[in-house]
Amino acid sequence: MKILIAEDESALSKALQIKLTDEGLGVDVAHDGEEAIRMLQENKYDVILVDLMMPGKSGLDVIKFIKKNNIEVKIIVDSNLSQEQDKEEVEALGVKDFIIKSNVSIEEIIQKINSLK
Image (cartoon, rainbow, N blue to C red; front, side, top):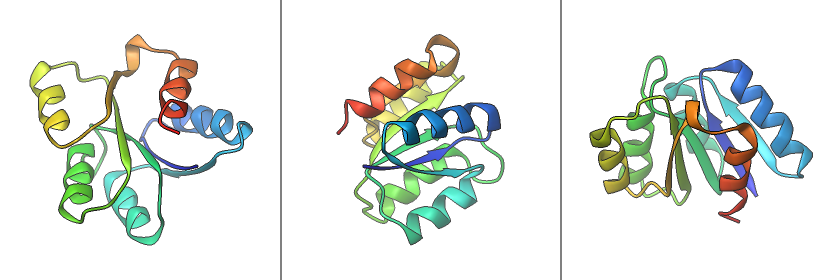
């Protein structure tokens, strides 16, 4: 399984990368929306974990790019935005799960990713 982590919080993205790699999964990290889009164009991923608030292009921009280009990838949003309208908007775009970062541990995020295998 190959995963793209699109997350601008470097401590979180590094911790997730280490844990997922230790489980034998392939992991790439994008630190902003533009980098995530470029990586999606160059590689095939099974899952993308995408933060909604990133510099440059937002996570929502990344999700819209995925849908517009019919990229087959399971999407999990991780965000500190907990507005119901944000959740509804990304779910309408086919997001598999919406995680509020401040409410879950790294282990719980890993479990959600592994549940999509």
